[in-house]
Image (cartoon, helix red, strand yellow):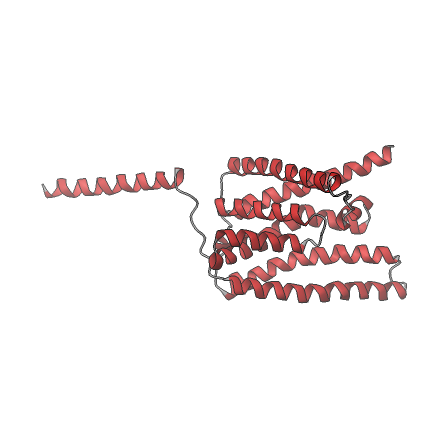
Length: 273
């Protein structure tokens, strides 16, 4: 009788474990991230990035100007500005990862998994990306239409658009950074690090708003501020649902690649006619 009772208990535990495991896989939401850093860490990181990046921007511009005067390089004033912007943008996104590593991994002793480095369904990621792109392009279309027809404001060319269309050294650097480096680095910083910090201290709603607002602000595009903020909000929302940084990196990369392809296609079309 004792052996039979013990056997039943073991069998019951195994059944419960199996049911719980299946339930987690099929019905329960993604497991919460262990966020050891906080909003103050995020604020300090923002101040640090602003101070350092301003110094890098003006330092790079000054260095290129000096090299140009000494004939070490041969650049026009516009080329100096363009190359400065491309180098600045590349350093900016790379520096974001360094900041995240310092505050989250080194200072707060977190793991990369806590930042969202965890597997998520590939099919669901593709589905999220497809739906998100439809929403993003719809919002962008309506936004441009309202500005043009209601307010009479034409869309100006952005700095990135001008450089990509030039296809010189500055443009090629920017294409690589925008298509490959930026989605990885920006998602780690704005979603994995900043959003998680704001969510921890202020909740999901304020976390979504603050992270998307700062994301739009960092792009320095006044005309496109609202669409970029919508994109930032959507990326943070998907990260909130999936708890995986890979889903938003994939979406961000696909979106950037589509934009670059459109810009390059426009250049080829103009050359043909």
